[in-house]
Length: 138
Image (cartoon, rainbow, N blue to C red; front, side, top):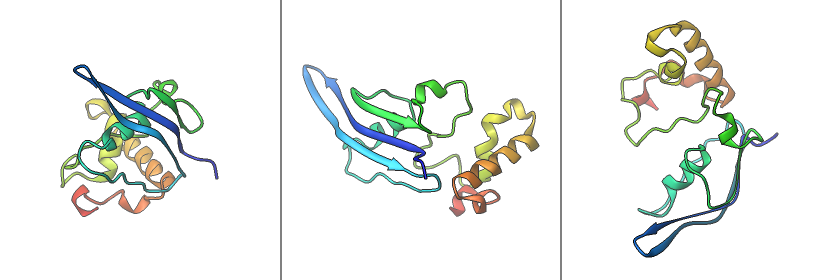
């Protein structure tokens, strides 16, 4: 099975005043379709930076990221398959399939089509049972 996400030897750092602060050093990982992955680490240890790089929201200083064998920056014209949410999520009462489908139904138009697409997306990642559940039930 081909990787959904491939991160190879990613390095990233930031300039803080006159000091260079390395955050990630040669990080590599592969995620297969349907896998659930978590990042664990202490405060200011690069978890958010790694996730933003994997989602194509930030560029690494070195290394490569491939999403479905393409650079995330080349997927800009397609619907996003990675969504960034904070610890609280979109709200505990939100139905998962609605949240996944929201970007596909601007101003509420095309909701039934968006929900169908969202259900297919959840099936693709091995989580079809989440479609009708509320965020707080996950």
